[in-house]
Structure formats: structure tokens, C-alpha cells
Length: 400
Image 1 (tube, rainbow, N blue to C red):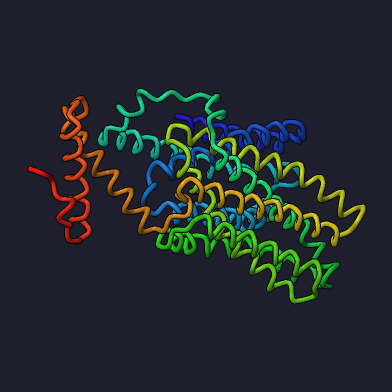
Image 2 (image 1 turned 135 degrees about the horizontal axis):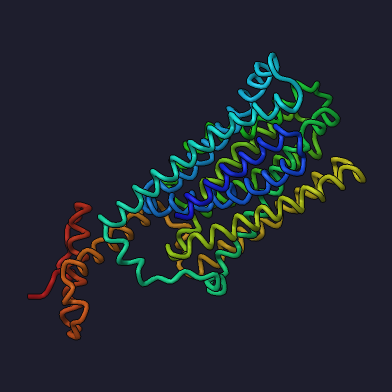
């Protein structure tokens, strides 16, 4: 239901925005974008929660990569088709009326988004009913006060998220002039260099997601991505190496981090709290982007681009410190965030088999006989080992 409501906000916001342009009312256009933003950012939270609910324990990292890829493809399509549509309409319309008519085409995509949200809600509800998840969720209470129970690990992820992303989007927004002044590129070349990050993320995010799914070690990949991004900024700050090299590194690192970082939230947060966790993560990220965009503009105006790159380097250093701290905290608690894919799959399979045994034999849940429970655990282990085609050792056999 939440996703449908958010998609409606997006559609309503776009309609208000288009009407504002059609009647030449700037304040109405601002209201439209405000409503659109409320729905758009919340819709991203619902999207992440759906992804975890459907793909946790399977191809979750690749799914997050696909989400990023499709969003970048959508942005690219929007940039490339809205201009030609405006020019086509400009043959019969002019000024703000032409702009308003062009924006109505965006409403069509918002309607498509709403239709997808409705279909997804239907299939999700059907899956919950067939799999018995509705019974499980009945006893779960969702509250904003869940935040106080969040572990140190999740707060470190929030820090990594905001400290990393503030060095990507604000930099790209200022990148055109930076490449022209720093490297002497013409506007067309500067635009091409500046678009590399988004272009690479659209192509490489699903590939990196698949790699992380096959290998595991999410936290290791996050640290690698932060270090690579820090290196790319330092290359542009202190060398005159062709900027294509640094931007390619940044694009690859950005794609890798998105695939590895966001799924980690699902490994430390219960499923009924995932919406809250992703909402806070998204809110902190957007707040950081808003603040840092203002700070970055002031730094460029007063100090220049070298100091801006130093500032971004400091932000990435914070992200790196938080990543190392998260590694240490996680290692002290068993290292679940850095499990290999093989180990994570084995543990998930064992958990599913144990859960299946409990469902098929509910009377065992109320049994007070310790010996009976021990035998049941041995049976679960033996069945799991048999599933992976291993020989069951004699000392694990069930006593008769």
C-alpha cells in the first residue's frame, strides 16, 4: 500500500508541475516538485524493501545493481527524448505553453510507474498469502522507536552512505566547469567526461552485483570502492593525468559500492524494520547531499576547485574510517557482513531446513524433552549435509 501511495504522490506532483508550467506560475511548479520529491524519495525506500523481501538470500546484490542501472537508463532516456519533444512541440506552441505540453509527456511515465506499483503490490500480497508470511507479520509491530534498537553496525553504514555519496553527486553537478578550467577541455569533451560515472554505472552495476552475489564479502568490496574513489579524486586534484582515467575509476567504484553497501542493511536489520532503516538511510543521504551541495558551491566560489577536491578527500576519509570501524565491529560479532557467498548460502539453507522442520512438526515446539530436541537438531544437520552431497560423519548420526 505504501508504494502505491508514494507512486500517487509522484504522479500528482508531476501533474501539478506540468499545470504550473502550462499557466506560467512558478510557485505552482515549485509545489509540484515538492510533492514529487516526497513521493519519489519514499518510493525508493519501498523499492529497496521489496527487493530485500523478494531476493534476500538469492541474487540480492545483483538486484540492487539492476535498480541502479535502470534508474541511470531512465535518466539517460529522459535527457535524450525531452529535448526533441520540446523542439517538435515548439513548431506549433511557444514559450511556457510549449514547456507545459512537454512536461505532460512525463506524466505518462509516472502513470506507468503507478501501474507497476499496483501490479507489484498484488503479486507481493499473493506471494505472502501462499508462503504464509502474513501469519508471521501479524505479530510484528512497526514503530519509529525501532531506531533506538539499531545496532552500531547500521549507524556506521549510514555514515559510509552519506560520506561517500556527497563526493559523487555534488562533484558531477560542478564537473563541467571543473574539467574546462582544470584540464582545458572544450564544453563537449567536458560533458562527455562528466557523464562517464552514470554511463558506467548503468552498464557495470548488474555485473558487479552478480560478482558480489557469487563471491560474497560485501564489506570488503565497500572498502575497496571507497579507496578507489578517494584515489580518483586525488588524481584529479594533484595530477594532470587524462581525466578519463580518474572518472572511469570513479564510475566503477560507484557501481561497486551501490551493489555491496545497500544489501548489507538486510543482514543486520529484521525484515519488519527494513522500511524504517532504508528510510532513515535515504533521509540522511539526501540531507547530506543538500548541505554539501551548498558547501561545495561556497568552496568553489571562495577557494577554488583544488580545495573542493581536498574537501571531498576528507569526506571519503571519513567513509573509509567508518568502513574499517564497521569491519572491526562486525569481526567482533562473528563477521556476518563479510561472509563468503558459499558460507552465507549454507547458513541460509540450514535455517530454512530448520524452519521447515518446525512447521511440519509443530508439536516439537512445545516439547520439554531436551533429548528429543537434540535428536531433531541432529536430523536437521544430517539432512543439510546430505543435500550438499557430503558424507555424514558417524558422530552426527541420530541416536535411536
